[in-house]
Image 1 (cartoon, rainbow over the protein chains, first blue to last red):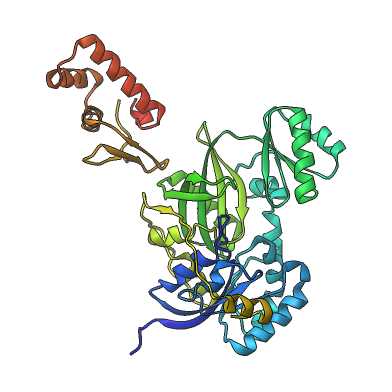
Image 2: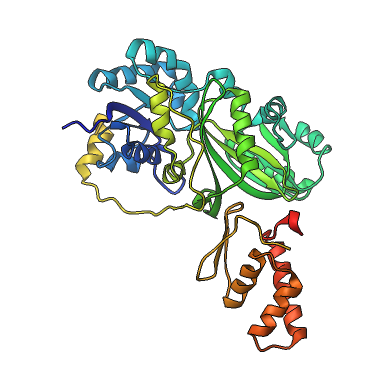
Amino acid sequence: MSSGRTPCTVAVSGLNNIDSPGPGMPVIRALRESSNLEVRIVGLSYDSLEPGLYMHDLVDKSYQIPLPSAGTEALLERLKYIQSIEQIDVLIPNFDAELHNFIRIAPLLRDSLRIKTFLPDLADFDARHKAVLFEYGQQHGVLVPKSHTVFTLMEFHRALEAYTYPVVVKGKYYDAQIAYSADEAVSAFYKISAKWGLPVLLQEHVRGTEVNVTVLGDGTGSCIGAVPMRKLYITDKGKAWAGVSIEDEALMQLSRTLIESSRWKGPCELEFMRSEEGEYYLMEMNPRFPAWVYLAFGCGQNHPEALVQMAMGHRPEPMTKYRVGHMFIRYSQDLIVPMEEFEKISTLGEL
Amino acid sequence: MKISQNIAISENGFLFNPATGDSFSTNACGKEIIRLLQEGQSQAQILEALQREFEVDQASLEKDLADFLYMLGNYRLLDANAQ
């Protein structure tokens, strides 16, 4: 008997459901609970210990793929092999570091392998990078803290002169430290550049409350869905372990304006700081689903489902309502895995 | 003085501010004050109502009520436009 749902195969990466979780498993859970799609899930992993590999109730088949540093040719070759076995309709990459490669090969995936994606183009992807976020904010009418990108200690010292303390010193991809003096700032520069390389970002510190929005844009200026969340518990890695959906029309309007003005295509997470004066500063724009995207589903908006529908050429209605005051709380659980499964994914690269 | 319109308070005195995501617990007396604020009563009217309900001297009640209202304001639970 037919379920009335459209069958489709979706490949998803980011199966690392660990203490700093990737978005893959929440995306898969939302797809599994879709009322419009009947999904078969192909997991794409980088490491044999990504927990999602072993969650067989959620992931039907998994394949290792080459690390982003191996380049687009290796990735394309691997996907050709995978597609010779699977019939992947849509692919959803969920790691920051892999997105550049997937955006570059997206036309080839579509034309040669008939795998659809729903990603921004490279220009849009690069435009919201944290090193140029200040200019991006100016272009789209959103406040962004003043910042400088520096490559040397001398440049860093020079840039510091334009700031009052505290300042924030950020790594190019991850990490941020607040410094209350020049000495602390220089120490943070050394630590962060040693860990994440150069450049380092020097940013004005904005005091306030962090609020995040998970958003989906259709690429033509429509915001298909948006749900705002405030973190309630943060781990020592700075990740939300619990959060609650909030009601904030000013924040929602700002998020919609940004998506409309930038014509953003695909999912993104907008990280804002609400200052003590009630102004919103965009701190980061992550070009993928956040790991807490399942909360959006819990609040009545299934963003992964809408993304798959758009990738398949449909035009879902924008979702404007969501339930306020719904929380997510993460938990950890031990999976018991026979060594044969670990052996299989480690040696054959598929499970 | 008015409590923010969208504040929800349960029978148990659990209060949720949907604008910030903050939640609080209050006792029966706090719950009563919030209920009176939601009805749009003034500080003087609330004082009068509490005096009728609780056996307490006026000076202590005035001070405790002022402290409680200050705390509500500090937690951004009062409607800034109505103050």
